[in-house]
Image 1 (cartoon, one colour):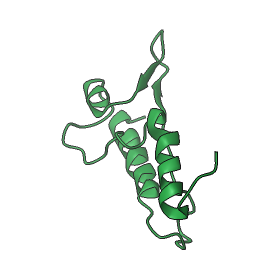
Image 2: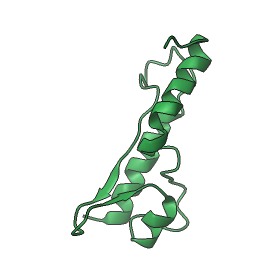
Image 3: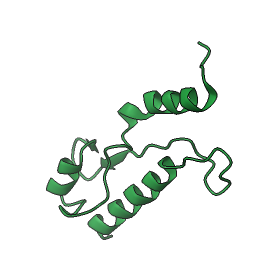
Length: 93
């Protein structure tokens, strides 16, 4: 499997889903998605959260327009709640 092309393809596809603006857009029904990139070939699996890590380990080209920055799992819930608050006005606890 080609490492660079595969990861880049997923980063770009998932980011396209995250950029949905219209609430009536039927092509993309997702508010927010995240992507967990893990290298299980290592003795201790490595989770990637930064573009620099992906580039250093050969999963992403340095000049790629793809990025994991807005797809990481550690931002997912806060980003999702922010989207709902902006669209619906308030969120009940």
